[in-house]
Length: 266
Image (cartoon, rainbow, N blue to C red; front, top):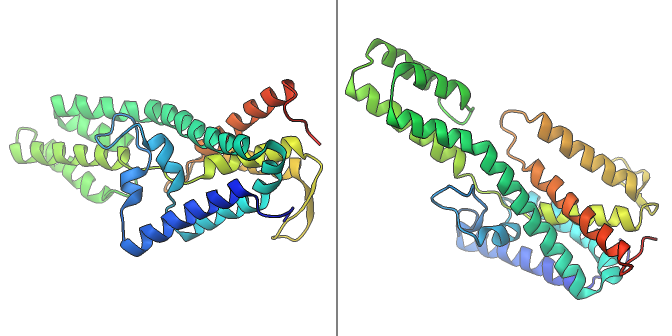
């Protein structure tokens, strides 16, 4: 801990915790309503680039993000001032959402194209190719394989055509309607700014309890996120690219402010 709780950090903590408590007590599907979706999803809305960063999937997700804001935010707010810190926090969060949204659009566009192609011309070969390229553990892979085998044996059967079209549509809906939530983009922006402005400040890790300079800690975090994004495992639903995007936005902003001499590293 580096000092007293500053006003903007306090408001950020209250807002995030308050929304999570409200969501839990009233059982509100805020992740579904306010989470960020791919732009061609039927459930996409522009406000999601802002609202997604105030919603958290579970308590551990909230705790991890808000602990980082609590620890690193006050010193940055004292350096920036209240207004500038809020602008910085929002810019990192919204910017991370925008960059992630662009990347997600590119990644999911092929799924959209393959879905439309199949629905226009359902046939056994294309169905087998579709489930091979877009399979996931979240789907009944054995059931899809059996459906594919049956379709090959009965390529003109209207029931198989209807079932495969339904399966393709369900895969598309499930993959494109997963909302991204959380303040991690803004939080990783805070970490980047902290490392740039206080690079040699000694921090004490919790596990293991050893000292480490801020610049090395943030470098390790960034390296882990980059590796995780490039080597994404099946079932990994963490938006590593959003974390990296938040760091990139922070790097750009801090460099601009340093060059303009509105802030200086210590």
